[in-house]
Length: 355
Length: 265
Image (tube, each protein chain N blue to C red):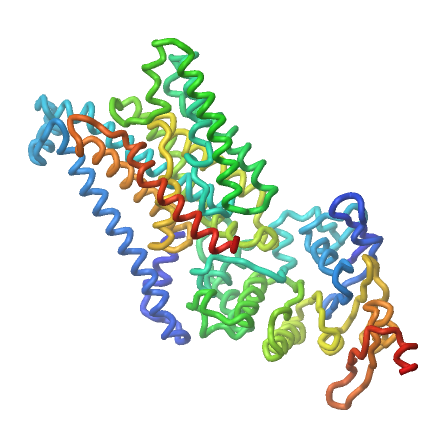
């Protein structure tokens, strides 16, 4: 699908008509391509920087040699502790950003974010319970957190759909759902036992102490979610029309909404299961991405995946290098950036909807 | 297309349509007229399967429309709605290409047939030169033509339009009506539309359906059914109906007072 798009706008003006407008179109296209290249380069840069810096510094050459031979003790520490953390941050960021853009397509609301509307805290609650009751089922944690995320999503969707598409209303209901689940999570955590501190990281996210088993889990669930998300871009585009228009074009609107929502919940809850609750990525990234690559989801979804990974890795890297050896969790950095941004978005949507 | 005994209600309490029966003549232009809230748009949405009737059937090519899969129906019948929304940065061509959805599967790429249909739709609606414009760069009349082009790209034998000329000025109204007429005469499309402007309805329709309070009051050729009495009973407006050599049959609304008061004045 993407290839066809490139060939369309990349060809030198073949149609005789519309020459002067064509430059507009190809300008948009060039900006899209350059945005991808820029984010790609930044991503490579921050991955390298993040791998080499921290409490243990390794040079690029030393790193490559060490990874190749496996005999360098320093590099082995980096491989065992820092690399998993980097991959988890990349995958979780990508998953949360894409989950955000999918939820926004389904709810036709630019403020939908899995963290803000409670999907992440629902996912966190159920996986917290599951990992306490069945600690052996660690690999299946995303499956449990999916149940929690789906429950929270169903509540938000059910309560806010009837009130139309009012963005602020969605946020209010989402905040309430979020409060319910995070409250339950906390009471579960504070039930008076010191034994639970080991799983506390599920609710208050830090990306430290990630192991290769975490990488495996998030690569599987998040990877499947991301691949599925790339396939439903066209459906997301059709949902941006009016519901009846999409239906008259032959789209099975209810089914499309359901499938896209399930993918979004898979992504959000697998990220939550491994990286904990991180809010605002699904809000920030899609908004910026729309400015850069436009609202065509066939471009938007892959772009959100790249830049979501970039943002979370950046936040985590800053968090562990700014005040080293102390760490600021990435989720806290995201909250500090994201809060003001949410206010900005709500003010904008007020203007659009004329309240 | 047959409309058989349709009764419809939004809330299961008040019926908006009462046992409506009608036939849509293939290859003709049928226009539904009537006052606000008489159920004409409701009838159109029941006919396009956007709302399902409590009783009765809509039969298209021998099958009840509820029996069609959405894609199948979208290959038979296209609808242009009164109000539309789309992301502002979509280009005309991209939006028109949306109309190819019922002919594509997720895996198949672009086919020549798709390109041809999009070209044809752009040509019919005279939008070839604007294909790379985005929606927010177009005038109201051009935007309406884009939505018509998207429906045309579906390549259906039947086209529905819900108040296609509302919000447009006179020039754009005529432009749309002449486009619809061409689609019917040159390409054989069966057209069903809802119009507010009675004179446009008279001028461009082969068949009129006049509705009031969820019922069909009268239907037939404009020349035969359009009288001052009909308009008074449907709209409660006193009109004069005249014939002009150049303009044909037309009507002019005079007053909303009953005719007796008019005479007494």
